[in-house]
Length: 167
Ligand code: ADP
Image 1 (cartoon, helix red, strand yellow):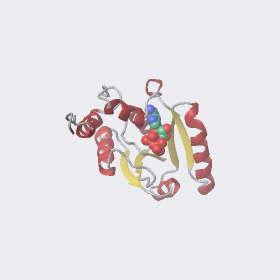
Image 2 (tube, rainbow, N blue to C red):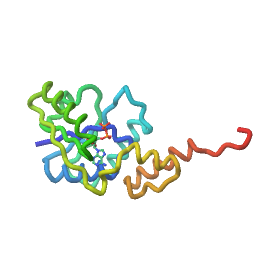
Image 3 (cartoon, rainbow, N blue to C red):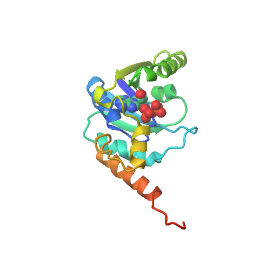
Image 4 (cartoon, rainbow, N blue to C red):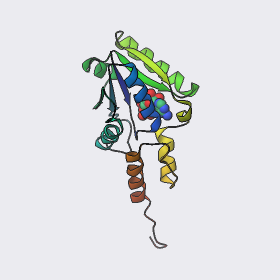
């Protein structure tokens, strides 16, 4: 059975990566797919996010990386995935994820949603928190893969160029 792990991955964190590694041991194949959501303005371009995921997962067998727009269940069907995989960090994730899972099941009863509990050490971790820490110059090396840490440094160095008193 192949599983689809969809998300924004803006950027990929070690929490996402831990989930991908565990899923790769459970399924014949895992498709990590970046959702192109027109309602969100990402910090990283689609190409950057795909590259971040490819670099971080190249050592894993059976992991493919892609992107999609539109309905997740449609992409699952097209790519031959019988399972949509989502991570649960805390109760706060649960209500929203349950709603999406029920909606997806009503649209495509043949596609199941499976939740994996986040590793405890990554349960506080989100892409937003990582961006917030990096924006203010904090250390993120223990939160994201090395390539992502470099991308974050580049992103915020460029944006935070100190301005003179008059400018
Ligand atoms: P989305 O916008 O679809 O929620 P995210 O990139 O934030 O995209 O998350 C994608 C998936 O990864 C979701 O299922 C989310 O619960 C899970 N996830 C987010 N952070 C972590 C983490 N620290 N550990 C494991 N899974 C996570």
